[in-house]
Structure formats: structure tokens, C-alpha cells
Image (cartoon, rainbow, N blue to C red; front, top):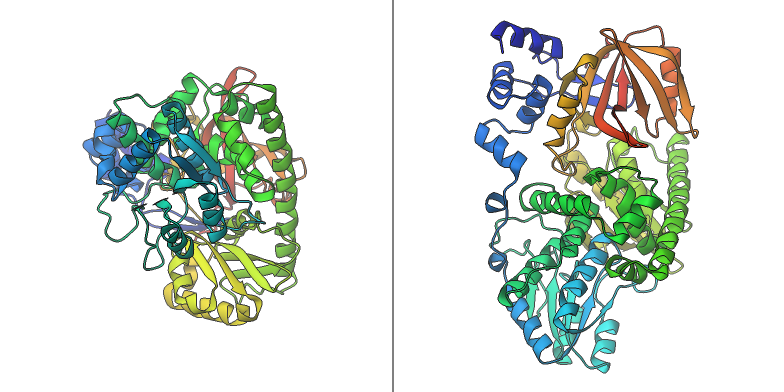
Amino acid sequence: MNKDKLKAGLLKAGLFQGFNKIQGERFVWNIPEINKSEVERISNENNFSLPTASVLYTRGLITKKDIGSFIFTSKEDNVFDSKLLKDAELAAKRLIDAINNKEKILIFGDYDVDGITSTSLLLLALLPLKANINFYLPNRIKDGYGLSERIVKKAAQNNYKLIITVDNGITAFDAANLAKELLVDLIITDHHRPNGPIPEAFAIIDSNQSDCLYPYKELAGVGTIFKIVSIIYSELQKELPDKIYELLMLGTVADVALLTGENRYWVKYGLNKINKKRSFAVSVLAQNSGLNKNKIDSRDIGFMLAPQLNALGRLDDPRSAVQFLIGSQSDKIEEIGLKLKQINEERKKIDRAIYLDVETAIFDKKINLEKENVIIAASKDWPAGVIGLVAGKLTQNYGKPAILLHLDSDGLLKGSCRSIPEFNIFNALQKCSDLLIQFGGHSFAAGLKLHKKNLPEFKSRLEKIILEEVDQKDLVPKIKIDGFLDLPDLKYSFLSELELLEPFGNGNEQPIFIIKNVTLQGDAQILKEKHVKCNVFADGVIKPVIFFNRPELYYYLNKNKEKYFNLAAYVSKNEWNDKISIELQGVDVSLPGDFL
């Protein structure tokens, strides 16, 4: 490409240094400093458009080798030998022995999608090997989280010789001690960070335990059990069933694990599998979601398919979800699929009601966001199973950590935390551990339990911790911009470039672009009282935009319809009735002078 044309294109695309923040209608737009010559080089060397080159640059993908490795995601570069995972080989051998000796094996899972898919994956792997195996998924309300002494005692009474946990167990000290006492071998497979010491067990597989040298630390629970299963099948010289990879992908995406390295490889691999041949379960979930497209991507999994499975664990009994995932086409599986859809619709209604409760408290200053840097709220009316989702939405929209708690009849508060990148909520909970009965999780998300009487001191201490660790300017709702676009740039060739960067998710977010100086064509319309649709015009081109869950923009856009404004948006493919079009999904808007 002609150098002068490239420079003109860079200028037109807005790739310039000078300002790095815009105050949007809701979010602060963080715009990274961009080295124009580097973006130009990336564009030239890789035959990418400038906006795509900008995305690669802002994500640290600078060299041709790094870009190629990221896009092609080879197994050799990303997947490590499963035997490097501490105790994984020991666990695999114990399971093979149990199968050969016809010992009774109990899988103990968790009620979220990671736990459900982990349980399903292990069942699907061991049943063809003639394992004498059963599973138990706890009921969130009746059983609570994690392996309990009650379950261990019951397993021993029923002659189970081996219990294997999936997606839990790293804090199950009492249960582990009882298993040892009752001569039941316990294998713990987990991915959560230990709070300190770990239980005694036959084998403990968790890449986050301090003496585990496995190079990749971001495996979900389903990824952890997959490593053990892969050793078993390698030892037996057998091929893993294809459906294993579907479950691995589902659980990894649903648990919002980082989509980097090994996770990225397996999610990409699993998506390729289901887009060649969908299982009956995935087909039913897609149909429930009204997903009428040939190619399912990670966003469809995370926002449309996985929530149906999650809803079962949040509001009902998750065990039928395992039957649904490993079963073949039948009336029973269709019946479970219908149940998943119905419970998920109920979950959405409850989510909206809880969110409205908290927003009302913020509006009435019962939660004073001018003084409080962590959103903390509790109610006996909020089901414990769904408050984590609402906490996540509050964190996204207000830019502050959120902790929502269910108050039970015994005066115990049980809840979920969601946080921002600048504040490690797990570390903060560790500093408050003397006030807590139980806690666990990760830097972005955690669960906790405490006595109601400790709540005031807990709130006070958290406020002190966040003020010490986080700059006030970071406690605002914000989005990261990846580059600038003009409406004429929206071509299918550009869309194809973006698809090379998929799958999108945690650690590889879908790019957000700024389209500058657009005007509204006609009036904005409101859909279902919560979404806004409009047409924007610039450079002789008109494009439709949809804003999901931003009803306030209906008034904002129509009030400013005579003005130029900047649009922050995702670019994606829209498939409907076998027709493909390029879709802009609006994230936020700003007026041209709204620089910070």
C-alpha cells in the first residue's frame, strides 16, 4: 500500500496520540496510546486493515510470529502435557484401578455450569470404560457449596471406595478427614485458589496450589478434570469421544475463564466441533434462545446457551442438566430442555427485580455511591442462587465492586462478589477472613458467608482496603476502546478479519471501536421497553445500530438528534432467515466535546 495513503488512512481512522479518555453517556472511554508507525507496520506485514491492526497492537500482539500464533492457536504452542499437573497421573492411575477392580466411584460436582459440565465430562469418559460410577450434584439451597461430611458418610455407607470432586474440594478439610477415617479414597480436582493450607487426600489436582508446576494456571474446573481424563485415555490407547470437547468448551466459557493460551485452544477446538456437528443438547439450547444461525460463537455460549444450564443450578435441582448434556435425542431430553427454558425465564424476572431493588436503594441514597466505593446490599427476599449475576451487572454499570447477600432465618448472610480489574476481591476477603465463616473464589468473583452482626465491620474494613489499593479515578464505569472506524470501513472483509481474533471472552474481549461524528437518521426507537434501535449516518453511509438494555438512550439520542455524536460499538455478524449482514451493537455514545 502507498505510504501516504496509509498515513492518510491512519489519520482518518483516528489513530492518534493526544487524548486518552472520553466521558460517554454512561461509561468513561479509555483509549490506549497508539504508536502509529507500529500499527502501520502490523497492517502492512499481515495484510490487515488499520482498525484490525490497531486491535492487535492494543492487545500486545506486535510481531508477525505472535500474531500468527494467536490467530492459528496451535496445540503445540498452547497445550501442555497433562502429566505436568501435580497428582494428575496419580489420580488417573487410581481411577483406572477402580474401573478394573469394579470399585464404586462417586463424582461430587457443583451446581454451576462448570461443575455440571465437569461431572458430565467425567461420566461421558468413564461410562464407556465400564466404570461402576455415579454422581451427586448438591442442591444450592439444601446442601450448600462443596463436599460435606454428610455426603462422605453416606457414600461410605453405600460402599463407595473412591470419591472424586470436580470444580470444588480445595477447602473441604472436614470432609477429607472423614473420608480418610472411613477408608474412602478422595481425589480432589479444583481450580479455585486455596485460602492457605490444603486438605489431606489421596490426590489433589489444582493448578493454583503452590507446589504445582503446571505452566498454565487458568484452567476451569472442567479443564482440570479433562487433563486427568486425557491421561486415562492415553494410557488405555483410546480416542476421547467428540462430545468431551463440547463439554470442555461449554464449561470453560460459562465459568468466564481466561480465553488465553490453553483455554483459547480448547474453546476454539470445541466451537469448531459443534459448528460441524451439533449435539442434540446444543441444538435444543440454541432453539430455546431463538438462535437462528449456522455458526455459534463464544458470545452465544456465554450469553444465551450457558445461562439456561446455570439457571437450573441457581433455582432448581441441577442433576437433570447432566442427564440433558450426556443423553441422546429423546422425549425426556426435550422435556428437560423445555424446563431449562422456563426456569431461565423465571431467573431473568428475578434478576430484574433484584437489580431494581438495588438501583432504588442507590437512588434513595440508602447506598450512597458518593461515599461508598463498594456496593453492598442484603435482603431475605433475594434467592442466593441468582445474586451473583446481578452483582456482575452492578459492577459493570457502576464501575465498583458489588457484594449482594441473602439473609436467612438464622441471621446468616450468604452471597456473591464481583469486582473490577483494579481490585482483587479474593485478596480483600482474605484480609477480612476473621469476620467470615467461609469464602473462596478468584480475583474477579468470589463467594462468602458471614454472621449478620459482622456486616458493619466487614463493610468498614472493605472500604478501608479499597481506598488503600485503588485510585478513585478507577472506580467509575469504563470501557476499553480498541480503535477507530469509519462507517465505510464496515465491509465483509473487515468482519472476516475480526473473526480471526475469536473466540472472544475474558482476556480476549470483543473489540470496541469509536465511530466519530455520526448523526441520527430519523428517530430512535425503543424495543420491548429496554432496547434502542436507530440509524446513524456519516461519510455518505447509513448503518443500523442496536443498543441492548440501554432504554435511557432513547431520550438522549432523540434530544440530541440534530447534533454530531461519537458512537462506541461492537462490530458483529447478524444472521437472520439465512441472510447475513454487518451489525453495530452500540455500547455508549458521547458528544464531540466530551474529552477528559
